[in-house]
Length: 425
Image (cartoon, rainbow, N blue to C red; front, side, top):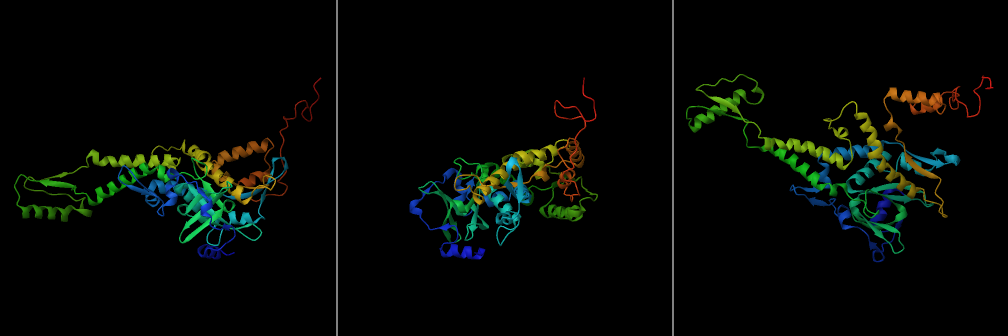
């Protein structure tokens, strides 16, 4: 069924693929007020902060620190290769490309967007609302044919009497229930394991302070009544004389002419007005808010433009920590939910032989000297072949390079003598 037909079916209230009839009277709402406010409001929910600023998802994204953190994480997740693997005997695995799920995840999940855009959008939903939802559209044989992202603010999680979950889509004229098996739902940190907590809601006070400081700075420099300086004279000037003196000063030394040499007579003096310390303090506040928002998303400050404490000695290690401690937990959430819904266990409970996994090797690559030293160790100790190394450097394989493993001459199993030596008497 075409994507447009799915939405037409939703609007018309007919059954389409994984959609089920509306049975609200048989469902019990499990949503938590403290963790789900943003999913119920069409504007993404709002929180009035002590700084006097009302924080919504849209307002939060206008703060550069929030936007930078969300973009960094969403674009990183979207740009990583997402592969399908088959488990083999002996702990080995094989990459799989001949299943329909691979095309959806790797190339095009629906008619309207690429895999990058779908994953970027879903990641943004997760990072802002705390939940990412995508409708799984299935064909006649039950195989998935499309993945459609849905704004979290239009989804409610419900529980049926048999313990199964259902998802109510209510927005844009759509009011339907979706079976648990037909909804990809990636929750963030959660109190109940069903609905993720919105980072924006819980960081509202920090975000509100940042927005308030930004608004104060814009008003201070754009509409401030504090002049840049003033001219004093010993003589008492009439109002028209004072206006004329100010006009002539502005014409001769204002704007682009500020570097000229000023000439004053009648013992006149020009005194510059400096910003009082309490007025300039908002600059330090803004610096603190940048680090504070980075702390909420566990992002190294240098990755969102704060290089104040970054050095050449620590910046590479911070990048590696970003992958292992910040990015990896989000990737695992996606991997496990996609595997659970697109490759469910067999009827006897046996796990599917197929699963998905992000490839983060590209982000963990060190500088060229470190990589080549690591390759040399693996090559010399016999666990990397020529083509193993070439594939990691995105180079074409060479003939006979798959099994040309080396073996150190001075290393043999315990109890055996090295080749070419006489047995010990």
